[in-house]
Amino acid sequence: MLAPSTPAELAQALRDAAARKRTIALAGNSSKRLMAGPREPADVEITTSGLRGVLEYEPHDLTISVEAGLPWYDFTSLLAEHRQIVPLDPPFAATATVGGVIAANCSGPRRRLYGTARDLVIGMTFATLEGKLVQSGGMVVKNVAGLDMAKLMIGSFGTLAAIATVNFKLLPAPEEEQSFLLPYPAAADAASVRDRILASPLQPSAIDLVNPAAAASFGGGDWLLAVRLGGNPAAMRRGEAELAHIAGRLAVETECPATFWPEVRNFTSLFLDRHPDGAVVRASCTLKDVAAVMESFPGPALARAASGVCYGYFEQAESTAAWFARAKGLGWKAVIEFAPEARKRTLELWPSPGGDLEIMRRVKALFDPSNLLNRGRLYRRI
Image 1: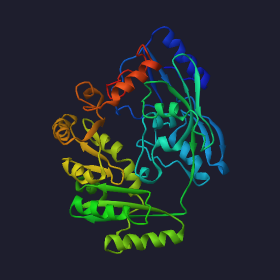
Image 2 (image 1 turned 180 degrees about the vertical axis):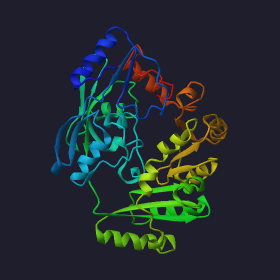
Image 3 (image 1 turned 120 degrees about the vertical axis):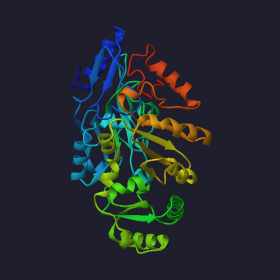
Image 4 (image 1 turned 90 degrees about the horizontal axis):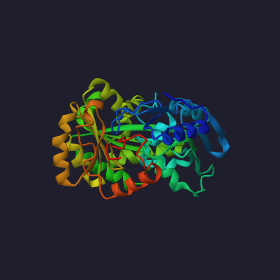
């Protein structure tokens, strides 16, 4: 296992391995080893966990540059000291690295307001198999030069190059936050209230939908619509009144516990700990289809209800096949996002990749023509 301590050493390690046509397994802290495709055996293993530096941070500029191996927990703790955030809410945040979060394009409940990594990353340095360090973007929020190269790395699972440093735009933490759990007997009822919220002046940072099977983990038994608001005290009072008007009840009666969002963020890791043979399906759909997709899952399910991203949890990975057969007939797009390593070579992880796959393969050939880097890691398609 090679653990370079500088971006230059990382680039050199990639170059040395590629020059000898040796296959390479690239990772951060391997916190998301169950995510995406299998970890194929490789001649050389390289970790970015030795790259832990904070390169540039001026809180008044609302930007920061850090190395890819910096633990996500340490990164967000540093920002919290200055009441600043990068609100990606990734799973496995306690053990993930910055580079791993970006390479896997992880996001969570607050993507509704703040977006994903592609919206928060303003620059990057990555190391290629030729041993070059390529800088894309910069430290200025409005600087868009070269950003497309950085965007290629986001969600590539290390199949193109190794992320060495990442630059983020930062956001001030809200002065106050309030969250509400609104129970409904049916998914359609919750979706109707979601639509009214989206048409209102409210700007929630998160709107999640939890089905009854998942709600049991939070002490509930109905469909739960979770709404998270942030702002100054005056905005909070207005938001609470508006939400109470929309929901047809006093919002104060449905205020959710402080543990709710951390439990939502950690739902995947806790589920996989309890069900080592289980799998997690991620489905993307239109907002009008969220209720139908959520109702189709036979077990626990969560949704970013204002973004059209749904997560279904299966206690046995093989049972995903029946769900995918139905989803294909309905035109839903989905992947098996997490699965046991032993099952990944027999499951169809990404059944319907669409026309973009050929473009992605061409990009892979440009960066890694000999297919040496993280082979099969992108859902066994690349």
